[in-house]
Image (tube, rainbow, N blue to C red):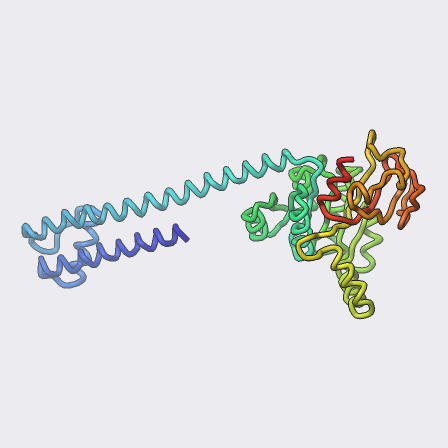
Length: 330
């Protein structure tokens, strides 16, 4: 907007100089409009063609003033144009270099492939949880908007190995595929799995038959936004109180209660203790909803207080971020 105002001012000054030159020559040399415009043009441009009428002293002084005025406006305009072009290029190059550096420094981050409606929701959630991530999107306008808001974003095709490499897939913890078609998601999952055997992959599935294809391609989990949306709408109709309660505990006013997973690490103060001995609710204020032993695939809901916590076990707890951090400190 600032550059637009500057060039508008330059255009207005140029019009004023030309108008002044035409009117001045018409009055001083007593010539018609075309001749006056011609005199103004050759004077401002300093090309040196012959005058259309005999120049008197007043016309000569007027020409001198017109030359300096015209050259000043033209010079200012050219300088502004070059400044805009070169500053813009330098700023863009610096911004791109800085973003590439930040992406190279990422570790244990997430890669979001596709910044459509579902991808934007994922991005919003990652930002709220301060999770490190980078976005791959083909639409340049979306990439520009994301970068302007401070999001690390790359313009490119997520099915391309070079783009995934640029996003740091070998250092990433997980990848989210939210592209517009199932074919693109399947191809991205397949490429990502071939590049990184251990990366956790979650993919959007549009068609019901896509779940099997995505899992076969290497996805760890598939999600259908349409199915989830439909189930939630139906649940609001059939069990409105239950859904309202779930909404309340996950986002209640200023205090957000979150479902979080906590993994028992080596040398943890909780390792080797029974849940009754760990006294997690007393120490942190959290509610332990489920427990999955390291060797099991499924969670045990409402685990017994006699369950022993061991390294590698995963607990699902409910509470505030502050309470989760308090438990993590243990």
